[in-house]
Length: 182
Image (tube, rainbow, N blue to C red; front, side, top):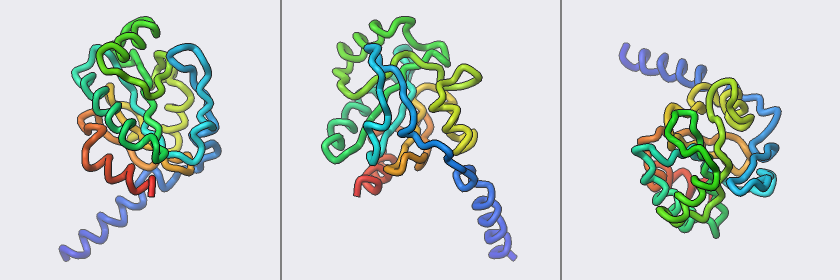
């Protein structure tokens, strides 16, 4: 009876896993987003590379994760990983001006991975990347708070998502990144 129950739960979990229903009419690399400096970041330039997308905020308790994002970037950029920081005020914890965010990140964390302009990441005003993520991966792709992470695989599809509490240099993320890079 116990084995039957476990089997049934497993089948239900597989059936309802949101990524299994993705139709992916578009992939991540089909989008563009403005950089923190105002230039356009054509995500097609990252084609064939895994991308860790993180919505960030200057006044969040998780802001210290910028150090770990930079460490991840430095460790794996030559192997193909892209770390993309997306500053957002969707949770009311970001500076109001892109130049202030850029300066904050450079001065306090010596950030040199790509950063976008301040961007909405949830709701009706969310950037199309986040609407695409929700459509293709379900609610688990919608940031619940700042420093929520979405890992894009080399095919431009969502590989996994990680809560704000999951550090960018956690074993969980490192193992997944390394598997994507190999």
